[in-house]
Amino acid sequence: MGRSIQLFWSFLIFLTCVASEDCAECSDASSILHHKTMGRNVRPHHHHNHHHHPHHSHPRCRKPYPFIWDNDANYDDTLAFLYLAHSENLDWKAITIESDGMGTPHGGPTNIAAVAQLVGLGDVPIAMGGLSSLSPIATMPLQWRIETDEFFERQFESGILEMTDKAIVDETAPQLIVKILKESECPVVILTTGPATNVAEALDMDPSIAENIQGIYMMGSAYGVPGTNNVYDWQMTYNGVKGSCTEDGGQTYTGLSPPLLKDGVKSAIRPECRGVDMTAHGDTEWNVFMDVRAWRMVYGFLEPSPADVYVLAANATLNMPVTLDEMEEYASTLADEDLRVFVIELAKAFLAAGEAKWWDAQCAVVMDQVLSGKKIGVCSNWAEQKVTSVSLVWRSNLTDGELNPYGSIKDDEDAHAPPVDYCLDGNVTQMWEVYWPMVNQTG
Ligand SMILES: [Ca+2]
Image (cartoon, rainbow, N blue to C red; front, side):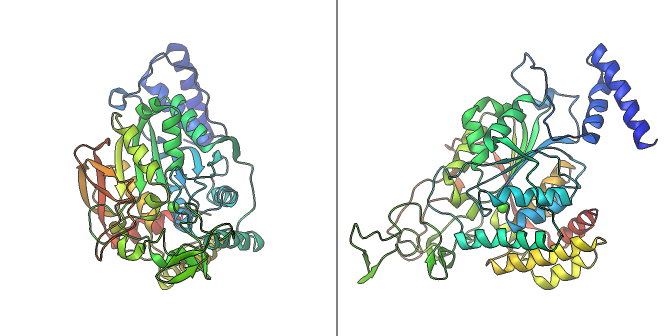
């Protein structure tokens, strides 16, 4: 059946069903229609009388799942996007950008908007996040964040990406998340590949929306395997300027108070992260570290909800570094020339920013496989149904080998948290087999 005939047919069934109500074909037809004609506006729904959407009793809801992607517009988020764009499991409702992660508050949204256009999703609404973390101790070094914008600017200059802000909506990210979850007839799948601030704020604005989350997939934490902390002391400084842990306490010497005295040395800026060497004492991961409270809130709000919760822990991605050789090798298999150049340039910029791993892209592939009913795949080992707490406790005075509890996630049967499935190990071979052919559909 030709595409337009199929569309027309779907439309006819849809009209018939709207009149007769409640036939099984109705939602199929409407979802085909909706999928094919996905516009920038979230489909308006008449308000239903029921307030709960327990997905187990929703036989009419099937794939593709309504989908929200919350991300911080980093290089690995971009790698994730190149894959996600072609997933048949997803009916894109919104992209919400974290302002307190890697992408700059203004650059992150427009950079992702440009990539959305590249992968054929230029009409999906994009919302900007609030300016601050809910627990602001750390940010990514500002210089790295600016370099991300500069990477994208180079792609605009060379014509590989087109500058655009047309998909950026007026609502804030949390407002858009609330709106979609309240209006969606079918439970929504959420992927967070950033600090999770937007999702926490949305749940705080309206806790009832948790009822309409089918599953949430989160990239982050150092759960499950000791020594997988990836917040390092060397990341706290860039070109001699403190880039992180600057938001809490006086980092900048104003002359209004005496300079900090540590180990007999006077310093205008607070050394390390509030005096703690995170390489030696961290037990966390950047997405959690940037907003520990947001993670804790998300867990808390989801405790009573029907949502399935999956977290890809840092350990799962340790054996998946981004290397230039490998990127060049696989990029050469891509049919689209612009995409080929883009992927290689992205790898170079990513590698220049310090540690580069597949983090978010791996999380995206794992989510897609779980949605396809393939739980063991790119995730090769799960710790299932763990009840865990996110520690808010900061400690400055630590002995050798002692870990700062802040941002660590541990088993805790008293936690206000849903049971979480943590992915602990990744299958690299399968990642390459699955990821690249999907990306190759762009262009
Ligand atoms: Ca990210």
